[in-house]
Image 1 (tube, rainbow, N blue to C red):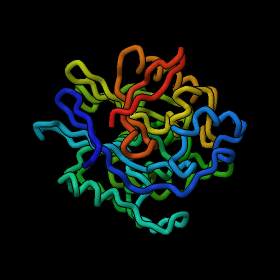
Image 2 (cartoon, one colour):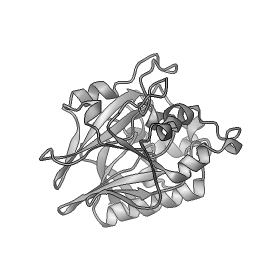
Image 3 (cartoon, rainbow, N blue to C red):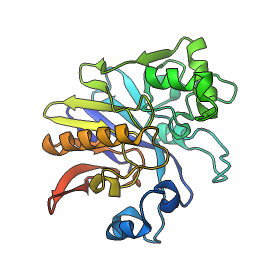
Image 4 (cartoon, one colour):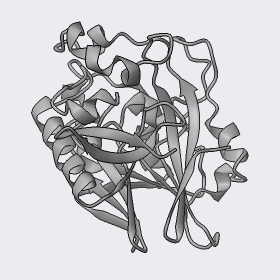
Length: 282
């Protein structure tokens, strides 16, 4: 059963691509002492005491099958991937949901890191969703396409998977809030990258937000100032994380996280002993 959630007229479902190898929190959250993880060990790591992340996209479709078919993020890409020795499964998992690459009308990229853009194009730069517009943050585009940033912020995945989109005429650069439909919008949450953005689905009485890399590990729901080494601007990413999680709690939003394990990645921000916590829905 593919995890999904109904939001009014829309359905949001997971499209898993690839699972990470074992990850070392002392490396990725190098500013956080290992002892600080102890209260979160049961939720932050798996049964073997290991932290793994899931690389995935999210599929947004109307329940009546009318209107656009939207894919948010495209995972690691075809592979074979050097760090796992495995291929990506995004296309396979789209097919399991009855969706072909040609059915996708919009691809929204939360940010331009390699594990979110891998299936945008093939190795030759050909678009893999030929009927889609690709919505990429202008701030990310400007930053990663600037040759002056290549030394300190190299991003070969951007050059392979995002740069060719302009020449194919499918690139849509987003600035600020952008509506794909009256109920589906892109909202800026900068910090993880210069142009990191989330996707909001508001329909009926419900709101869901697909959060990209606003947080990587469930412990960050409580420890909102914890930042991974991948955050471009930790002050800005922390502000974006705190702001959105406060709204999510106060307004009872549903959160579709980018990297939490499948089966626990859709949930709500709740209060536990005056601290924020994660309540998984599916």
